[in-house]
Amino acid sequence: MHISTRRKFLGQLSLISAAIALPKFASSSVLAEDDFVIAEVSEGKLRGIRKDGVCLFKGVPYAGTLSGDRRFKRPAPLEPWTGVSDALQLGAPSIQPQFQSRAVNEPKPVEDCLFLNVWTPANDNKKRPVMFYNHGGGFSNGSGGALDQDGSNLARFFNVVVVETNHRLGLMGFLYLEHIAGPEYAGSGNNGLLDIVDGLKWVKRNIEAFGGDPDNVMIWGESGGGAKTSCLYAMPTAAPYFNKASIESGPGLRMLPKEAAIEMTKLVFSELNIELKDWKKILDVPVKDLIDVQNKVPSLMADSDYIHQHGVVGFVPNNFAPVVDGVALPHDPFDPFAPKISKDKPLMTGWNEDEWAFFAMASHDTGALKNDFTFEALQAKFEPEFGADTQKIIATYRQTRPNASASDIWMAVKSINMMGLGTIAIAERKAEQHGAPVYLYNFGYKSEAKIPGTDYPFGTPHAMDITFKFNNEVPGTPAGFFSGNKPGRFTASHHMAELWTTFARTGKPAAKDVPEWPAYNLTDRPTMRIDTTCEVINDRYKEELAMWRSIGRVGYHSLNSR
Image 1 (cartoon, rainbow, N blue to C red):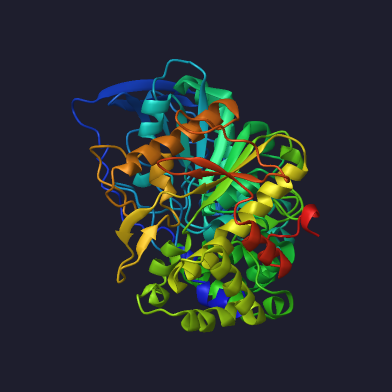
Image 2 (image 1 turned 90 degrees about the vertical axis):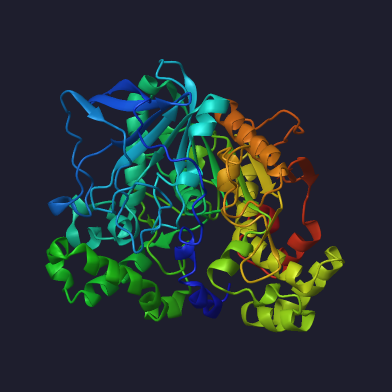
């Protein structure tokens, strides 16, 4: 993506949560007929509810305060309590620019946001696999209470324990301060990730009380949650607390260089009219003012000398993200190699076939999806991004997809650039290690629902996989926003949920009525295409990928491709 295109794109990823309408799942508010259930954790007793065969504990604190003089530091220790503490309502999410969590009955965002939610079939001390989910929303919004990622059906139908956390986001979670504030603020550029690690530590200490196995923990996440999972896969502090991972539509190959984080910090203090030597004044700045500055940072960074010299940085361009600080995050997660620290941990990774449909909707860039969009118009639309390579790209896709319209090719090219090339690079680099297996997938179930303002169907857009892999596309429950109304979605959802939960249980994805899924390798390059009928496709997109490699697109710098 060229710099001009990325600048245009700066605000779009912040819409990852906002553009998803709430699925109409039944609310899980507490009713008189619900049964209460008690669990004892290391700090005290918790009261949850048992509803429709699932025990649910909401708003469980997993670490102490972050506010006051703890702002930008590691949290205070969690204080024990006496008696029984209610875990019946969602905890507050992190401070964020817009309240975009897709949750119901959730408190307003606050600084003290370290809460988690647990779904389990029973608090019976059995050792079920634990699926520790990292929510999406880039690194700036969202929460562990979103309805589309409700863990009830995974617990109910697949006998697993699901855990989701709230953690610091944006400036509150990733402002790099240790170069001016000293050792007390070590790791400040990765506080949001280190919060997640604290959640994993809580799981290690306590999940047996919820029927989970502390020695069989899978981390997973979609979009920004996939990028968070990419980082955790490379973090020494996280390594003891998980056993396998899944990175979904969020290939976090690279994060912020420390020098870029330092530049971002300078811009923040300049906007606040605080000199760096007076850095402590930021501890008293009202949250609203911090968010106002956070909203300005991407455009300020885009115009900075640093970006002019080094090019666009970050998972979300020029925005707050984990910092490659050499300690908490020792190196980029998957560039130039897969992290050695997780060599022996199985990995799944993949993307949705029509990722860009989401972003076209979110950015109101749907002109290329109109019925009168021509190949001449496609050429003009691609040239600002791909320059002299435009004709080669279009010619390759017209050859490999002879029946595709100009709109179809726009969607395919934008989707594989957005998520596919980086995802394949992750699979390649993991396979190059010759350690634990990596499994590559494409989610391909096609929704017939139309992208607003067009006659073009969503297909398989970014974020549609959430309700499918959580098995929240089930008879009797209205479909998610993207999913359409074809009954085939129930089968595709069950396939995806069973593949994921089997991987959580065994380290190898498998499901009834699904072919055996071979590990990715650099000879056959097998990809599982997930749909109502699943199939393994070897060396998928072979000619197209050869073209992308030939023009040096991001993601193709593995040993095998040099």
